[in-house]
Length: 151
Image (tube, rainbow, N blue to C red; front, side, top):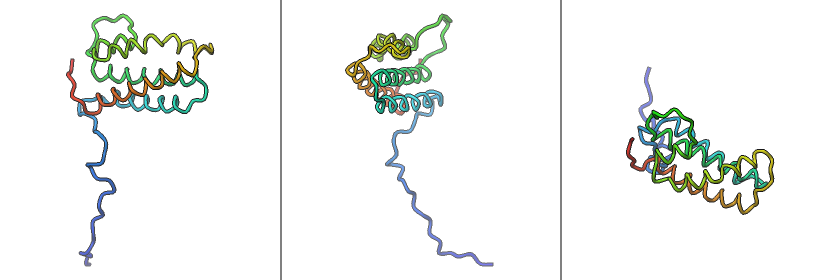
């Protein structure tokens, strides 16, 4: 039996150079999963019609992104008392302290919107959406390739 010798090997569809950043080897899979979930929440916020829904989804996107940073960078805690993700973010990534304060200050408004209280305006929702988008960009760059210290 003879085999053909003139077979050509197909070229790859995508070149390695054209792909986005690859996660660092030490970035936990859980952090990457949370980042993907954050991006899904951000997309939901961008497509939401009502300001309350937009506000909730944008805040949840930031919350998931903050949790991704905590998963990737936080050392195990000795203190077993409950802490908000915004407190944990400040401890794990001090450079994100102002972001943590910004989103923590809007947690009550998100809770009210989730309870059906209609106090969120288009301006509130749009501002939070813009800031969540920027925050996710910063977190994404941090988790997907920027050099960082381990604590």
